[in-house]
Image (cartoon, rainbow, N blue to C red):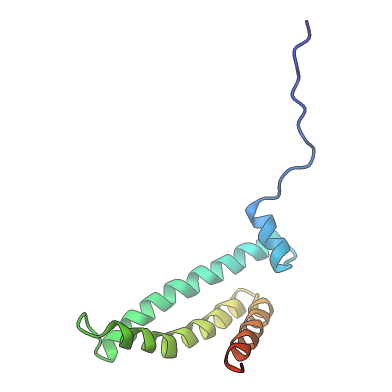
Length: 114
């Protein structure tokens, strides 16, 4: 009697990093890792800066949620965009982030030009 042998496909499903590489049109998995590193560094830095900034302007637990939200949008979000470009430049991925920034700016412009 012959045992059934499972035939495995020679086409493997692309990994998460490969999917990001394709989506972002990057040349290597190394670039994907650098881009992910920039996103994580930027997010971590903004969290620290927000705490410092909110303390500096005197926000505490009694400050209205809406005041904090508006302040976050007006001051912290632009800082995120600047840090993204700065960290991107430090790891050699400035062009990638610059293109993302331009795309986002066009989307925001369309949103407010209606």
